[in-house]
Amino acid sequence: MSDAFEELKNCRLCPRNCGADRTRSRGFCGEGAVMRISRAALHMWEEPVISGTRGSGAVFFTGCNLKCIFCQNAAISDGGTGREVTPEELADIFFDLKEQGAHNINLVTPSHFTPGIIEAIRLAKKRDLGLPFVWNSSGFELAETLRKLEGLIDVYLPDYKYHAGSKEVFYSSAPGYSAWAKLAIDEMFRQVGTPVIEDGLIKRGVIVRHLVMPLGVKNACEAVDYLAETYGDDIYISIMNQYTPLINIPGALREDQIKRLEPFPELHRKVTKREYRRVIEHCLSLGLENVFIQEEDASGEDFIPTWDL
Image 1 (cartoon, rainbow, N blue to C red):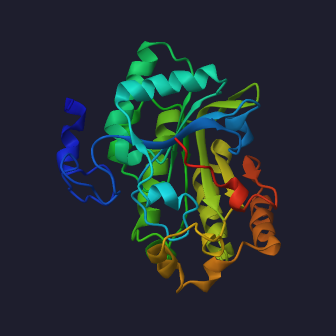
Image 2: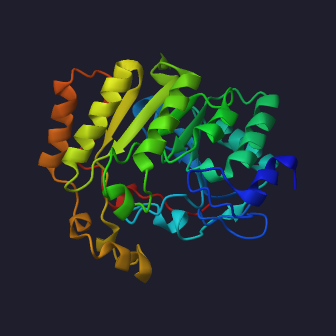
Image 3: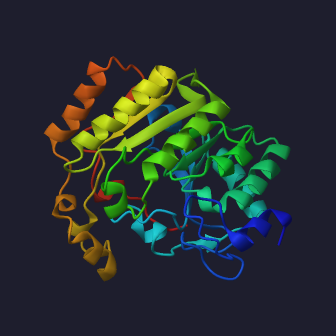
């Protein structure tokens, strides 16, 4: 095992600070020291400046340091689906995606595998991959860990799920989420600065996503207020309308996952048109220009990828 994995013997990569020896067991994220992926393919469903016309080269990593009871990728974030890859194999996958026409390499839920991903990116850059790297994360990250990525990541694509309050605890088992996410996004912005768009594609910059939840208009508007006050149009904000209640899809969740959702009946339905429009109207009232919105039919089973490696 390389020196890059030494820190995984007492893992402190994320705000969980679990201290697990991931070379011997699994951390809070559910993963050991060896990277695992569940899918690597062209992805057309990201923001237009990321997917472009040919697709983003999305690599989905298994495991997650959040425990969101509503996660549409629950099969991999909490289900263990995936196969092991070395940094060398991951670098080869980057080149495979490039050959398929990918505009960029999109690293999805990567934080808990940071050491191995850093090795893979460096290998790919030595081989002149020539594509931007996108760090597509939950936002629940340590700025200290993100600093190790400086010069390697071109585009940061974090979530800002909760501005404050009890939902970050009840929905994601993540007390303090908003405070950690603010620090993380600030570090991301420090590294890559204002967006650089060329030929309709983002080459550098930050896009912060917020998923509007059922009964979540207040949280969404507060999140937008914070981002607008802090960054204005120096970042992009993506207001997402794709919450999918998996509890209504037969076979989508295990019995234990269903039980976690049962106490929250608001999560058993989609976001209403009125709820989503209220958030968009709030963005307009603030005069924001760099905002992405989704179509009204952006939720549902068809938008969940097949985890077929």
